[in-house]
Image 1 (cartoon, rainbow, N blue to C red):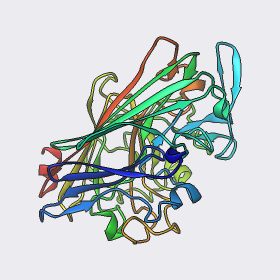
Image 2: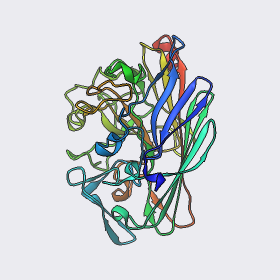
Image 3: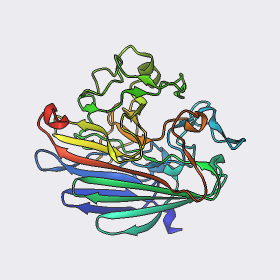
Length: 346
């Protein structure tokens, strides 16, 4: 089938340009102007399209059916146990081999500034119940990229879709680390994990810990701190419990690169956001521009339900029943700033 060939398309709006792939409905590149007026690709990707299948790293892909981790690679729904692949030690990560990042999505609609991809995930794929109809729409707007997820099922199931873009706001061609980037996350709590990075079920305060990003700070400031959460993640790889209620599109994180002046604001209507600082990026194939990325050469801000929600009744539910529509609206919005005060509003 023609759709089983990795095929790029482009969308644009003003100074913004994006390249999308049908494999994983992935964002391969996103060109954003800096303070010098010149656009640069701010997302990580592979130069060789074949590498997206040969050595998957979730670059710019849709993660699902269930993004993040499910403990013990199993969950119970209405008294029935479902077993899914253990691809992260004893646990499941991003739904296992052949997850949404590694399937070919159907290009449903495409015009100059937007594109919609759809995918039909059959019941039983990787052990998940229900035939799931999933859809993602990318729209380049005047200040960045809006992303809309929708899904429906014919049997009770669990769903958690997010976008797995890796950002380097200095530009992916710089092959620089992101430790000088500044970050703010409006979250007073996070979900501590066991050594396998499965949440314990506790919602812990970030107060006095390296995970306190309520006041903007550089990513590198505390990334090597002597703290159990940092040791488990080998840096940042944590879910933050957002202060503002879920269900309404609001800012969930702001990042700023002082070199280029680019500011990224992430917006979402989900209850949590996962920060990952690319701790294991070193040693990969060439990036989009031909550069080789170092460890911590990009960061991810993934809005979503909490990890292991299917096994944690006190977490926001990820259940989807027939007749319901799963929705997740999010956006990557950009502007320029010359200082910390300008980037973060004082």
